Length: 322
Image 1 (cartoon, rainbow, N blue to C red):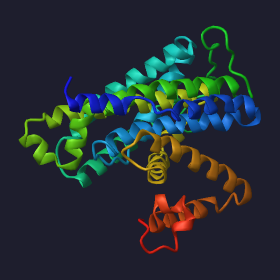
Image 2: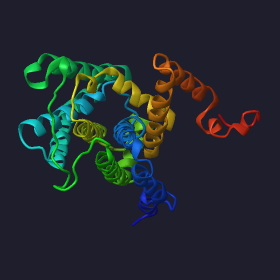
Image 3: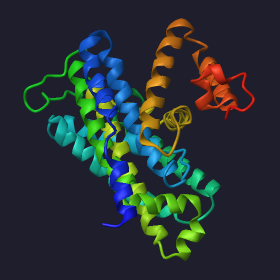
């Protein structure tokens, strides 16, 4: 094992403080059972954000249609539970499989053209699926949504309750599993090649990196993880609607990465926590204008800088980094 491989392996290992954070996350539904539902939603959104960070933060592909995989995974899992069998884990695997297939097919569309072209193509895929879900009302329920989705007990023992505790632990567990797996991926030689493509695509091609193959692989992987997040959403809520495909889903997850930062997996997790807690708090105070305050927060974040925002004592220092 050479020095570079040893460095990648070292980076993939958990730091001493990380298990503490995850233990606190798993203790949260017990310490605050009244907030189990929002904890479940935060875990799902965090997984969705981590999936986008794979292609945005590590590969440099901007996408406005990532909700296509989220929504397809959600509808696939919901239809599987309603028409085939209600087992959550099998439904999760099915939702991932369908989203993975779409990701593989869609990956060929991002290999050519400029960033603007990719932006429009990804947006177009999301809009096509939104319209299909709306028109195929005999299957998806159309604008009324897919109702009557009843999930069986998790592992045959844990029923999904109205308080959301089982759902929270289910989503947190899936998030942790994917986080560990993706951590190994981004700190592997494959992850290093993704960063090389992000930094300079032409240089990566010049040194022999099969850029198109790598783009197809990471885009397919990101689609699979986004499909898992969508499946979790419909399984834990018992409902699938056109909202899963809406543009605001893709926009929100981009905002989450702006808040938490790109190019590190915790950015999606931290951003999801801040975004969802702000959304919940502000919408309870000003239901009509909560988006204004989040927009104002993002403006301040960009102007001040993420590092300085969490260290306000540096605001008056001229030498502080933004």
